[in-house]
Length: 245
Image (cartoon, rainbow, N blue to C red; front, side):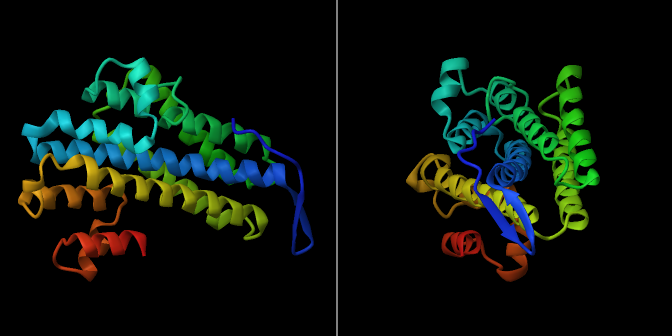
């Protein structure tokens, strides 16, 4: 669990919240967002491989590099194979940011601040954690599109429950800060990886292969449909502006 430094109080609308509690709520929401982001990245990569079967091996290493933890990965796995990367990002209990570990930490944070969050938020997150834990223990395949869809749906339910059942005060604001900062971080990382890693040669720029990879970037942040509603052509500048600005 992330350590907390100090316990300065925040006050709003006559309610005082210790920085320790705000910190735990912030990381609770941030870890749930992290789990959803990883599920989207893996799901989109599995779909992309169907369109580019000749480049299967090159599709998985960028996901590890997007985490910033490639050194940790290389110390514990012997190759960037699809099996290794999916296990690393999904079920690895020793990796601090896998889907399973992220939800374990989020649940522990929620348990600690149950007096602040709603009972519905706790119940939804607890069910989410047990869904992933049980899947890992049953040996559910990390190639299962249905599994990753369920992870995303659980995250959506959690976010909706936070919004619908918590007072929109200090705790709710910190939950939103955690969620949105995690999303911004992962969006910038996946853009960086796309630009410098995914294309194999300069000749791939502005080709069908390039379009498929940019479409994958948009899908990995759930932005493809909204982008196409605003723009017709997949151009680099429009995509970057859409995701950053």
